[in-house]
Structure formats: structure tokens, C-alpha cells
Amino acid sequence: MRVVHRLFALALGAPVLLWLACIGLVLVLAGPYGCSIHEGFATPCVVAGMDLGETAYAAGLIAAWGPLVLLPVMAGTAILWAAVTGVAVLVRRMRARSGRTGQGARRR
Image (cartoon, rainbow, N blue to C red; front, side, top):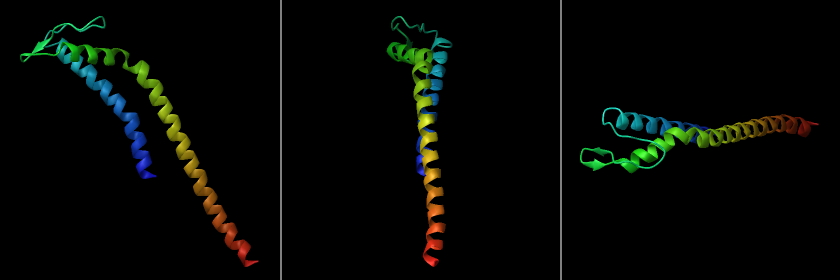
């Protein structure tokens, strides 16, 4: 069950980290490098001789619109995690009870 909890935690944390990384990239490219980043279209953004316009455009879209997509997915993941944990707890309790009643029934 520990592995399942870790996988669900990763599924909840990874989108947030991706979103924060995109925000950081957009802030760095727009701030010190002076790139123009907006939702309309990709604009040239030359950094160290490489054009990062498309990358900046994609990161800007994820930074701006990411929560609208990521929050429902994360909410569904959290609900699924709670359901899996609840079922696991119920199964564990039922096994513990059946073990106790099963032994008492055999002794009669």
C-alpha cells in the first residue's frame, strides 16, 4: 500500500511542479531576457543564440491555462486516492474481524 500512496502523491505533486516550472521559465524569459510572451502566437525569443519562442509560448500557455486543466485532474486523483485508501482500510478491518470470529467459531 505504501507504493500506491507514493504513486498517488507523485500524481498530485507532478502537475503542480510542472506548472511552477513553467511560471518560472516565463518569468525568466520575460524578465532578464526581455522576451515578449503572450497567448496569441509565438514571438522570436533569442537566448544564447537559440530561438526559444515556441518553448516560451508553450510554457506561457501552461502557466496561464494550466490550472484550469490540472485542478480537475488533481481533484479526481485525490478523490480516487481517498477511495482506494478507504477500500483498503475496510478490507483490512474485515480481515481482522473475520480472523477473530473465525477462530471463535472453530472452538465451539
